[in-house]
Length: 316
Image 1: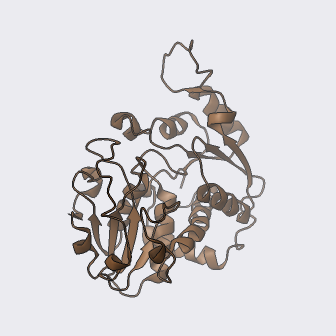
Image 2: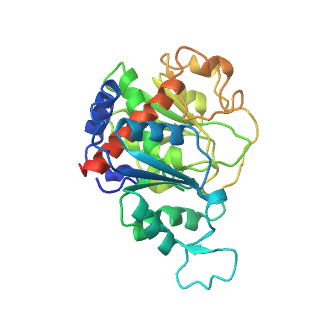
Image 3: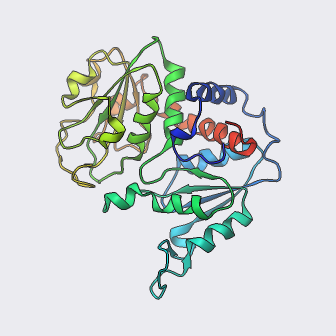
């Protein structure tokens, strides 16, 4: 695996999940393969789980790490070709990516969507520019439209808690006071497409995800109807796709509470974190024994570890 940008970079996703679980139980089994190699982590946005779990994963493989918070530590980058750089952009990505490549063996990038221009966000300007100009492999730590490391951690978590051969999994939209990107939801949907699970999306009208991503997936506009007999409830907010980046619904009618969870098949609750308590989910649900959010966060380490291992060894 040269680069890991989205789920399509994985040849056998089911095998990858099994390998990640093996690493979780044997986390020091490959502690030598990263010796004398450096992972450069470039952050254009905040991070807690992604940053710390990827650092831990790198350490478990013997990798050294370098970190830069680019928005407040680096020069403003220019991404456009043939630009006249007479404004606030001091460095072009052409030089920056090649220079960073000289210092690192793998470059990991985290850069969120702006939610102001759909075309630009879907063009993945930042991560695609690093792919174009870097001379070493590139790892996606969340981009404008994808968060494949989170989806892999989610797949590991479901696999560890599965009780039937074909569980029902619901991705449910939930309220949030800020407009949020689609990356986590997009990658979760793409991950679910390569499983044998029953999968539905529940969201209010006006909040459908990109139809190219959800093609063939059942979308239900009645949250309670979607929750019936579910085995896993994955809560996530995203802003409108059609009215790009907009918040269309401000009430709490889609809050996930115990009343709704009682409609399920004693479902496990999932969320990528950070979560707005009593906005997205009630305290009783997230603090219950059926909540998997801490396990999901822990599995971020082993999702990153298996991907880094494959990038180091160039395994498929």
